[in-house]
Image (cartoon, rainbow, N blue to C red; front, side, top):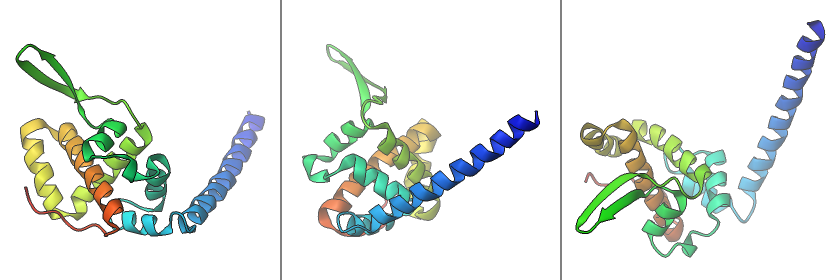
Length: 164
């Protein structure tokens, strides 16, 4: 029993050292010439820190490759699935095809964003009443990714949106 406990302590210490080492590498990457300006632009969005900004930038690479915001949303998997027969069209759950890491980062950032930006919160509350909390946060995440695309294309920091 004592051996297992000592092993767990050693494992925890090892993993802590590795986490610190990796965190330092991420910070170095964020300060590099290639990413520093873009990281600062993304950090202007409430809810996005250095780690999330780097993850999004590394996964998306150049946002210019997405000719439209819809194509970016589809790449991330934040578009609704569609079931159509004849004249009837029904939208279902999000496709979940695409980049799970960026989708997860966007949704997690949105939970913080709705606490910091009152206009986004108003939009979230409106959607929440109509469709429920989970669908509302996914809609906000899709909207955030569209705005992140625009931030990176225009090289302008985040600005609170108009209520809509």
